[in-house]
Image (cartoon, rainbow, N blue to C red; front, side, top):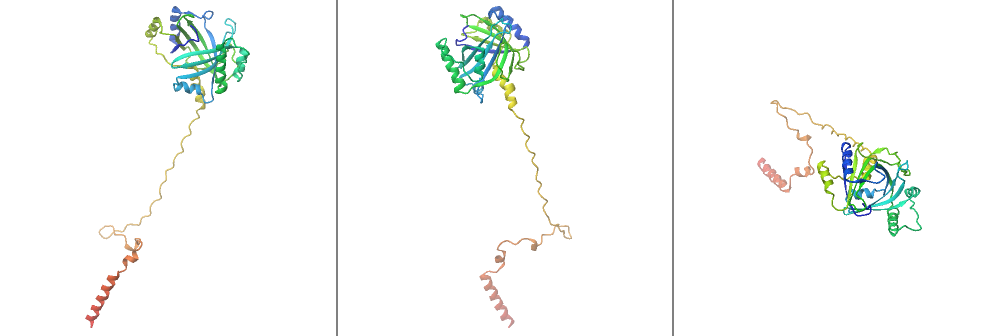
Length: 312
């Protein structure tokens, strides 16, 4: 199956007791990658911006997004020769296209430090376009290495003319110590899944074969999106960034001072005596209200005249 063709991907997270069974069932129907029947290690370095743009684009379901990574294959014993690539994984409306160029291990180290491999000429026009795209993503959009991931892959392919490829990625682990990638480096200390679990990825062009649909139904498998890069950030980087929330300050309840009340006086029948009028505050303008008006003064004068006549 051509890795550069448009394809659809389906992922399944398999528990330890199931991944070996399913791998054996797939091996009955498909051929393992030649020379890698026992699987092979895959080491990757993922690039992103300081704001983790690639991560958030995936979380928000941006239909047109690109992600850049470097990848190293090979075994230390030389059974699988070392090789290195810089890849652009482009997802557009659910269809995935992978574009990559081959580089040397020394060039890959320089690339991790921000230096793109220099080329006086390109093997093909396609390589030239991919290098230009990588240059735009790294320099123009300020992407740089974020995390490195390792896993052991078993791959089964239907051949160049086939329409399906199935891989099992066992024991995915990560590290945030950005050291040069070397083939089959085992020094990755942070697990991304339960030990013994695996990620089964199905890449297909066109419909899924009938025999594989039967396997899915037999084991009640449900596709589940799983990104190793996303899992690494969420499980480790983001948790370290989250500082414990400070406890809110305890509010002290303010108790108002007791009101001064006058002692109540009781009369001889036990009733509360009314408050003396003299102790009540006078209203503003009370002095004017207590004075008799002009008419009242005339009435008082007439009454005093009548009283004087009576006395006479």
